[in-house]
Amino acid sequence: MGPHRLLYQALCKAGDKFVYPVLPAFAKPAWNHAAGPKTVFFWAPTIKWTLIGAGLADLARPADKLSLYQNSALFATGAIWTRYCLVITPINYYLSSVNFFVMCTGLAQLCRIAHYRYQNPDWETKEIMETHN
Image (cartoon, rainbow, N blue to C red; front, side, top):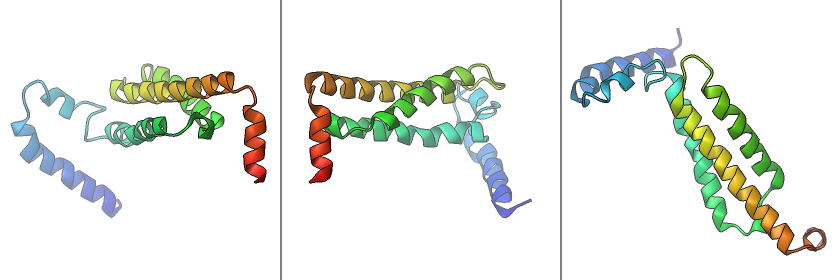
């Protein structure tokens, strides 16, 4: 057993000793849930929220600078994994919600790209000119 695993188990035991007793009654089942904060099923989606933050930050970027491929990938993976999270055991609503928002972020950016390209039919020419200058 690696030192990282021992550290994680010690943190979980400390949480059980100090955090669990002060949790409100409605939060106690979530603490010990199969997809709760003592498992990877909780921490992976928690970190994945940064993708949504990055997508929201991209709202400040001009639509012509957005990547069609990147946002298509975000949309597709968000859609696929949203569904998958609802059929796995344990059902992970937290991961499903983060994937749903990844999908929505990708879709919003794809709509911005489509709108830009519709409004600017010569977008390809502009893009080629910018890359050669």
